[in-house]
Structures are given as structure tokens and as C-alpha cells.
Length: 396
Image (cartoon, rainbow, N blue to C red; front, top):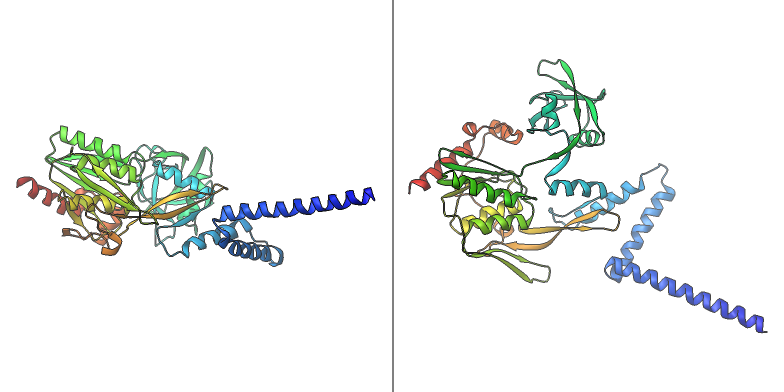
């Protein structure tokens, strides 16, 4: 009898332990999913996953299947600024935010006639420049393997996966091919470049990622010390970047007042302001339809303070800021978490972006050269318009 009582007690204890374990697992799931409402969706995902894994006649890569599902989930929230990155993609994104990437230092674009990719630009000081890669040459093969039919992303992945030197086959305009030895390495890009031209400072801002704020401020100081009477900021094709870098530049340029207003999901506002110190020079901002996020906001802030004339084409209108939420496996969600307003409390998404004060577009030939980085100032119609305007402002 005593022995029977011990078995019953043990069974009860095991049952209690099992229930407790279930409760702990359920609690963990609810914690990870952000609420009990997510449990049915998680269960269905597992059901679909297991159904494919057990029954599909092929041999699918279930990791890729899962990544596609996660990506589709973010796409379905209907916000073009939000997206999912797997762990590898997120690591590459982090390098981009630091203005660095793994590669040889070329910009490529597809050649319609051959289907191969043509070198549109070669970065100064890059492995490609050292190896003698020239603008206009076609990338034909890597280590003897043809690149015909491959996408630009395929080529990028293939090259970045190589450790050390490799043989790159290039095809010239006359059809002849040559081999060069090039190495794949970490390429550091400069987000800001500048020059002084006929008393006018020109500052090209490629993005607002790491180092751009200090780069802009340093460029301004140098140009002013060299006698610049006005400044042209070029944010064409600038995809934006970090709010912290944008604030560094705006705080230096603009006078005391509100700079940036952000509102979270609950509607709580956060206002960032500038001090009284500012740069009092005539200014022009060159922008286009690809001036996104921080670049678009930079132009809007200078315009609303009546600090600059806007030249170029109408921008897209983005009024959402994103953060990267890193998941447990190293993947991440790039998710819109705040809406933002200009100093005058304008929602650029509702207004449809910024309308330039002086509207001027590039021709198709100019646009191709601009994208490839080969458009000189004397052939750049938008730059010419900006230069004409800054000289008018200087003469007033």
C-alpha cells in the first residue's frame, strides 16, 4: 500500500511538472510573440512549414522558404519603407551604414546588347582601379566562369565570396578580352566630397550614413575658410540615412529653432532643436525624385527656414523613419516606427514630397552619365541651373 501511494504521488508530480512545462513554453511563446493573439498565426506557420517539409515531392531549402515567408509578412503591412533581412543581408546592411562594403570598387550597369554588365564607374583608390579596370569594359568572367545570364546581385555575391586575388576577364568595346588580377576587399566609401568653383562651394552628399554629418560640417568650414560666397548642396540620388547625422548638419547650418519633429505609434512627439549658431551664406539644394528620407528632409528644412533655394525635380515624399529590430537568429526587421514632420509641421508623405523652386530635369543621356558617376559639371543641366541661381543670390 505504501508503495502504491508512492507511485500515485510520483505520477501526480510528473503530471504537474508537465503542465508547468507547458505553461512555461506557452508563456515564453506569448512573450516572444508579443501577446496571446499571435499564437494562432505562429501555429499556422508551423503547420504550413511542416506540411511542406513532410509532403512536398521535391527537396526545398526550408530556410529559404521561411525567409520568403518572413519577407512576405513584412511586405503585407503595405509600407514600402519596411522590409525583412536575413542574417547575411543584415550584416551587409551594417557595413553599408558604416559606408563600407565588400567588393572591388566598381559600379556596374547592364549592357543591353550583350546582356553582360558594364563598368559604369571605378572608385578612386579601389582594387579595381589598381588592377586597371576601365569604365566601359564588360565583366565577362570570374576565374574562367562566364558571367553571361547572371544578375548584378549574383555577380556581387560571387565576387564578395572570394578570399584574396582572382582573375577577372574584361571585354572591350572592340570585342577583345583581357584578364586582370584583382582582389576583393573592404571598400570604404566617402559620403561627402566638396570643391570650390569660382567662389562657390559645392558639397556632394551621397548619403546620411556614418560620418556624413561631420563630413558636411568639415566641408562647410573648409569652403568658408577658402572664401566661398555661397554653397550648393547636392543630395540627388541620396537615399537618406541616420537621423543623428542629419541633425549634426542641420544644427550647424540653421539658426535657433525647431529642426525635426517625430511621433511614435502612440502619437507622442519628440522635438529636436537647433542653437543660435548658424551659417549665413546664400545656399542652393540640388535634389531629385531619388532624394529620400534624410536627404529630402534636409532640403525641406533649409527651404522652410528660407535658407536655401531648391533646384531639380519633385521628390517622392517620405515621412516615416525606420529602425532595425534585430531578431534572435541575427536577422532583422527594418521597420517604420515613427512618422516625422518638418520644422513647420509638414508631413511630406501627405504633401507628396517637395516641389523645387526651380524645376529642371536631366536629359536621358545626362541621367545615364549621372547614375554612372561620369557626368561632368559642364554637361549637367541641373548643376548649371543651381550655379546660375547661387550667383543671383550672391549678387543680391
